[in-house]
Length: 151
Image 1 (tube, rainbow, N blue to C red):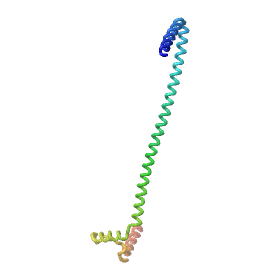
Image 2: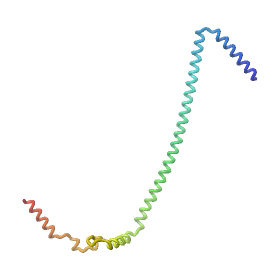
Image 3: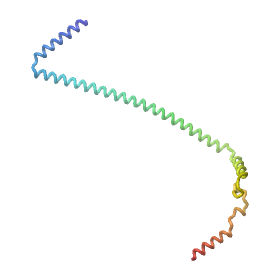
Image 4: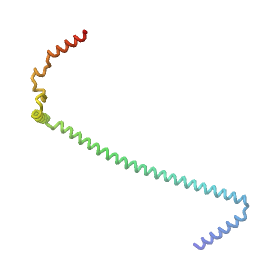
């Protein structure tokens, strides 16, 4: 069979050459134009097909990348949500389970030992006389203000 194919190719090529030589220049130019137009159409079709295939591949890759990014973003969000829940639980436990009266009493004792006598640490232990402002000083100040207003 390969001998027949080779023989057919040689005879077909020889016949084409003989016919080509018998054609006029106008007929040769018409055939060249037709062949060139078919070649251009095939090239355009194959280029369009290749570009469409590349567009499809790009879309699939973009979908794959987007799904990976979405999965990554989802995992980060869940990790952050877990951290926030943990911190919130810690704060709630701190305010509900800690004994603030005991801690406050300990802090007051430490400050009382090291504080100056002029600094009042616990305002609840002040006497009523010390807590009230001096009424005589406020009367003198208001009298001076009224006197300056008249001038």
